[in-house]
Image (cartoon, rainbow, N blue to C red):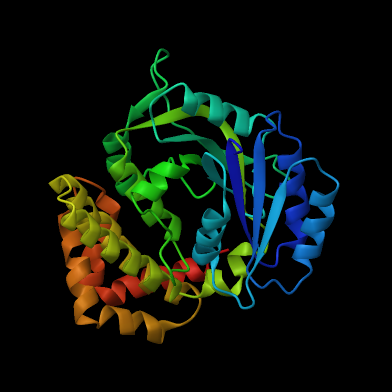
Length: 333
């Protein structure tokens, strides 16, 4: 059994997968395997991945879908095929430092935590500029209480994402933690929140070792411009709230979902429609009784996040003003 299984969902990333795999093959840690899950790519991504991996010394496996099923199901298939003691998910355009797997593995094994995460950077394709996100610990500590992280996570502080966490595979299996089938946006948040809920502590590597690359054409892609993607986010938070309530989570977690995350997701669904010129979709969201009920809970978020409460107030009592505000944003360079 290898120490780590690296699972990579792959869909039409021929232009970036070579660099991602090269980063993996350059790791200072060598006790790992790579599982690539082809989500019915049509651009030659698989042949490029096979070409790179075939000249490396790391064992690898390829799982292929006949039709596109989305990143959630691709990651689940990779998890099913993994044989390592731990699992690390990596997207086909992410970049990682040479010491990433080593630092995560050694930090995890130095604690009793079922997961370890490192800092990350959000940057452009050149990797030269970017914003760093990391979690600081007292110098003598290697881990932090998972409930503390979960409260921060549901409060909008995303220290963990799809590609900077190493999980114990047996921990995921024991708690039946999977990516939500059919969810095509923000699916990693549900997975991470459930992992933090079941964990007592999380091991921390403070250095930013993973780079999340934002491509120049990403903001204008079809998916980025589609406001209906936020319906997946709303559905995700509704499922997560049901999960938290069923498992008798502390009330503050339910309040964070009710007052911040759910209203914020609905508001993003409405305002993103304005940004891409689909005002009819904006009004469809605003006039939905169920969605208005969700957003109304954000009116009590002034002490948590004033901007959410302000937008909830406009959504509920002044939608024309909210529309006008985002019209101007859509026209600004």
